[in-house]
Image 1: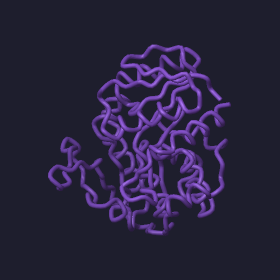
Image 2: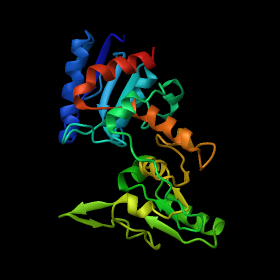
Image 3: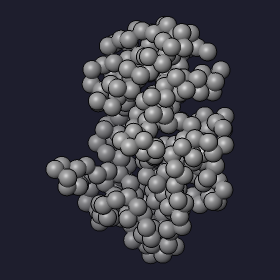
Length: 276
């Protein structure tokens, strides 16, 4: 078990993030980990815990922690699962990186945690002649990764690769007053359905994203995927159309990297075991 943790609270975290960091601190202390809560990175602890690794200040702290030989527990919104308790959702964690696929080979493939989510109904919604759908990153990711032209470059490339298919763009949606709007009006390309993601994916022949959680939705829906990062990269890095058994195996491993705010003691035990 790691001996110490620094919990970074910059004051810019969401309500969910703030509640999570409170639980992380309480769980670490219950495991006798020396716990420091800081507003600016101090360093010197075995672990750094933070919520929202894409923010500039937290991203810089993560890289300093790693450079100092420590580990960073990077928390963010979950990939799937509302859990069995009404109103209780799962948050995801990754070690050192934005997404945890690098540790999936060492992750258990048993279905105990997937069962707790209420296992999703795996479907086969793909249609070979259906549209190719490109998933947008959103403004924060573009800035964080320095990939301002990724969507347009990918859309043009796919139109050349699939001249007989419709190539559509799905912006990362945002809601104002209950209405879903397209923030990416600077991307001049035919749009896909902006409603529920299951409706967008149904009948598609391929989903292409850089690192979007939509790749997990596509795994459940049985749509082939091309991606460059994100949790689902572990599943799709060698082929875009894995078998049903491979999809189930991926989802089992994925759920070990999602924890409720009241499961932080178990989450710490898991992380310390994986990183032992």
